[in-house]
Image 1 (cartoon, rainbow, N blue to C red):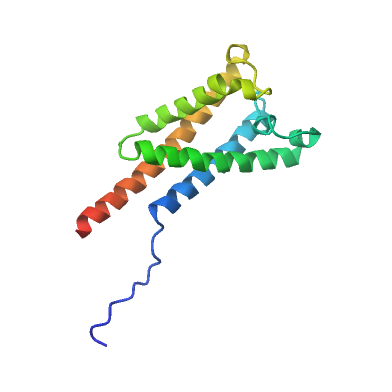
Image 2: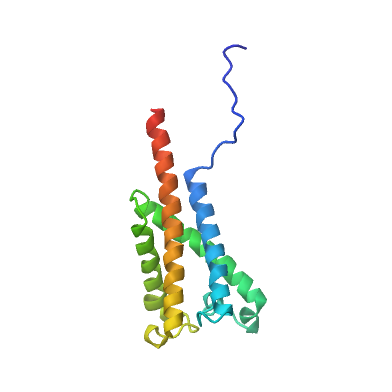
Length: 164
């Protein structure tokens, strides 16, 4: 009995992969909801429902059910974006890379993928409020994803090096 390993009273921490998944899901759900609130208060003319336009038929996609499903889809796509950040950029410190990642995502959606979303006007036809609001949303989203993933990577990396 004296040689038994000591049991910890603390739960086992999440794996890094699980943490990236939950960070991406929460980031997409939270910032998608903030995007809807910005649309509701007329800060932007782009609502989260544009994500359904290429695939869904019917008026339901512009009602409350479409909004909820759109925000859930943003959460799912955000998991993918979080894993891309994790694979490519997790080792880099600082907030600037997360902000840059947000800008890259903004440019991807509003310049490159714009033709598949009929609810988003061409970039030069968007209003100033829409551009400023959505850039800010993408910036804070990128900052959230980047900083969260980098912080956890650094914590895990320090624990691994101190254990060996």
